[in-house]
Image (tube, rainbow, N blue to C red):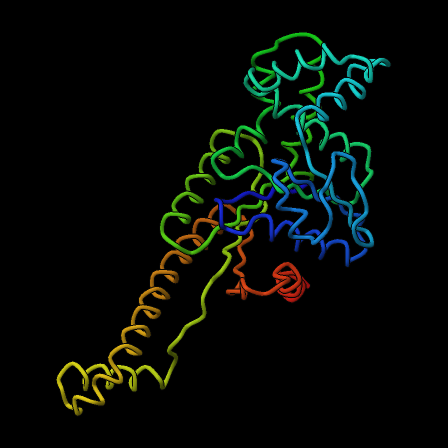
Length: 305
């Protein structure tokens, strides 16, 4: 089970979808789950709205979306084993309130469903389009948090096996998707520290998305520098200087951006390697394309095979 997280705009939903498509194409029966039920996963997969019940959207690829009420009903059906689950409307409303109010309860309902799917071996791989980086720790560590609050009883027993599954690095891992700018990289490093120092949940990979390529390479660098010097020192005619000013300024901005990206990526690579975490970078993909997921799936296929 892989929990894919990232800051808003980092591309975690796109990556989750592409990874799920890649796994399905390799013959693995794959489930991809959207945790916040905002419809982003359905849009990425270009399918109708997803429901709590998983459905096959492509060969070997199943998709679903979580919500608190249905997670609660599933919890009662699977774990409390209440045969009257369809008739407990008032009780469900009360428990739904508790699920949203009590710390860790809402998360345990959703994570419990995921762990159950893994335990029952209904799928070869479960990919979770998880909460953003600011909430992922509470999500993946919910069983531990709740077990500290509840010392005895059925909930304690259920959180125990969930913890064992979530803490097993051969079964569960977190994939952090980021972009190579300074703040996202800093937040990623902080998240890695938090996950590895305060939880027992493993980090499977760090993915840098939307990485730009070098805009000036090799023999082009001296040419660019000479043009810059010629314009700055007025060694060319005013007309030529005016014509070159804007393109050179844009090019200089792109070069500076790339230098900053390289520095940030080096920090990420170093931090990943020191933790034994796989690192991969995804080159900038045309966001205006009608199917970004398809492009990213092709990238993953080249990277992972």
